[in-house]
Length: 196
Picture 1 (tube, rainbow, N blue to C red):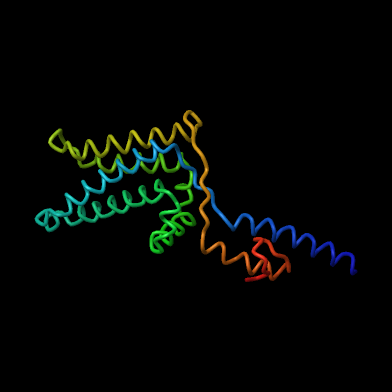
Picture 2 (cartoon, rainbow, N blue to C red; picture 1 turned 90 degrees about the horizontal axis):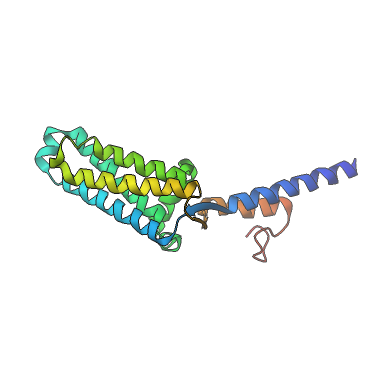
């Protein structure tokens, strides 16, 4: 009986150690600096275009649904910048870090190059819905930039161009490690304390 309890505890310990390592960090694929710069530049263009459209007060009264869509696009552009910027910068701003952590948990396709590539391509198609003619050249340029960056991200996902993994420590997940340490009575995160 005592032997089977030891086996059970050792299995629980192995499972808890594995869970703690998985919970401690999430990988966010990032491409080379030039690709990240292009994505941020395209997102800033998209954000600027959405802001320009939102400042047209007359349009907000005539087409309120379009204004809501511009707000969505602006948030999508900020999300693009959030995932392409250096994680060290994002972690220093609490609100941005919490927003990114929420997105990592609920929209984990944004953590891989292919998922973000499709997301950027989706943003491009949103801008193309506004382009009825070449008079909407700003929307066409924003769409083209986002589509180009989206395609480059898909190429990186398929390893046609290099990418690297950047570790992103998730605050909410790190809170689970001390609880698991208490459960297995072992210092899993190597901070010299159990459950602290």
